[in-house]
Image 1 (cartoon, helix red, strand yellow):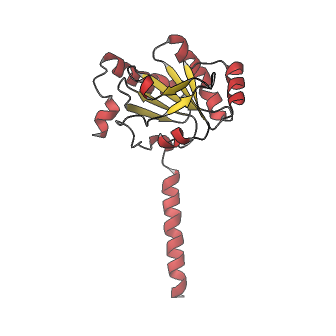
Image 2 (image 1 turned 180 degrees about the horizontal axis):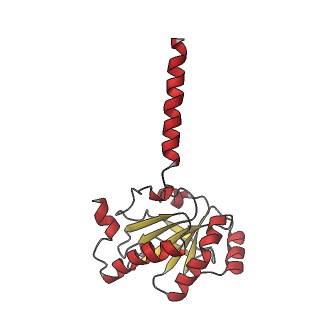
Length: 187
């Protein structure tokens, strides 16, 4: 009888841990890269594979880096919001096309519209991994010094855009030398 108590206890403990884990919001997973430089990269653009863009060449301005893929259904969900952001030209929007075939990415952008100033091709997913991407879409707010100031996991909703993303963008544009409110809370 006693030999059954240990497995039952372990099973009950695992059940409690699973139940607790299911209540957590995956969008609230803190990124260890907040406040750190964007990992160095040099990638071809989707539009022109002979054009290589580096992380260093993007420095000097605030921009959003949106990780997306043509095979990603959640990317379709946020795409109209990115199109709207692009129309307002608040900040440049740079795409990171993640583990996608170039022709599929080009077709997707032709069908749905292209909100990106440029889309970089991360065919093998190395840059996405270095950014700590859990899955697409994910969006990073990068300051003029190439420092990651905010990470949004999952598709951006209208509410996310208005209540969080645009607020953080405006904070950086108002005073680029300052950290965003989320950076201050992390310290």
